[in-house]
Amino acid sequence: MIIADKQIFEKLFRDYYSLLCNYAGRFITDYQIREDIVQNFFISIWEKKHLSVTEETFLPYAYRSIRNSCINYYKSEIFKEEFFTNLAEEWKEQLNEEEDFIYQKEVRDALQKLPEKCRKVFLLRCVTELKYKEIADITGISINTVKYHLGEAFRIMKEELKHLIFIFFLFFSEFTYPF
Image: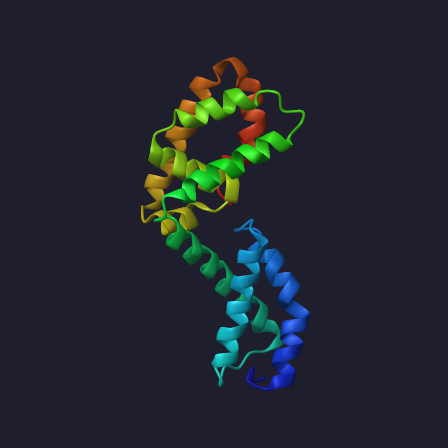
């Protein structure tokens, strides 16, 4: 099917817009930015007059494009001073939402003791749950360097929170394995 056909395009938009916005939510928490990315995706495929897809190929194509757009968004934001400040604030808000988590101050203090690069990689992994390769793409470093910074971040966090070691592993264990 040719996407330039208005009826096909409208059907794809109606059927997949919400799904693609939710998918973008895996990478970006701000709903407005997710909508912008998905809308830009649909604009770009509309402008490709001769793009031909099937039912089986549209969704993988859309997912890849949305994922890449989210990574490109982070790449553009990474150079803005407030990006990591906002990411750290978002992480703090997540901690604050956990009413049962009584060690918020200790974790925040430990986070502040991380070297800047370690903190950036740590936040990208733990807040956005990006894969190592995606973090490497965003930050412009190798996957091995991402692993190094994550290892350093976890080592420092472990040392800073040694009196809460059980809580630390319980809280962060889901982020230690690549997806």
